Length: 188
Image (cartoon, rainbow, N blue to C red; front, side, top):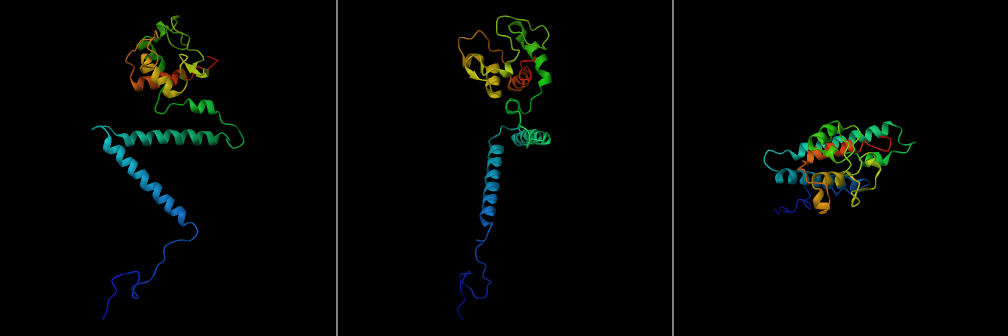
């Protein structure tokens, strides 16, 4: 007796044609996205420094975006207009309340007027009141969270002739100081 070696053409096996019905492309797309996402997460984890937990950082950041989005939806976002400017200036994993103390510690007030920062009455640099409403930082960098943080950490990289010194500001401190500065709109 001849036994077929191909299970598709084996008359003893039930024949199941490939899923080509409505919605099959959606299943394929979902599986592809999930597979790609898993590969990216594994790659991030594999490339991390020992002791770091980049997946926890990514989850925390995604959770903050989710909270921001749900808060926006709770304000009847469908009928109203969201404040895109305010949303664009939000900095994940920042604590704006730490900003004033950090600016005192780094001595920012010796050159700048900074509303809400004790002793910040300097006139060497520009006043930082209303910085959230400006288009540029130092006239050269677009006023975005990344641009402001980069300026705070390494001003001479962006403008070698600037009078602002590199103060060794860490990324975490720059994040908190930028978050505070973005609370200083025209009303401050």
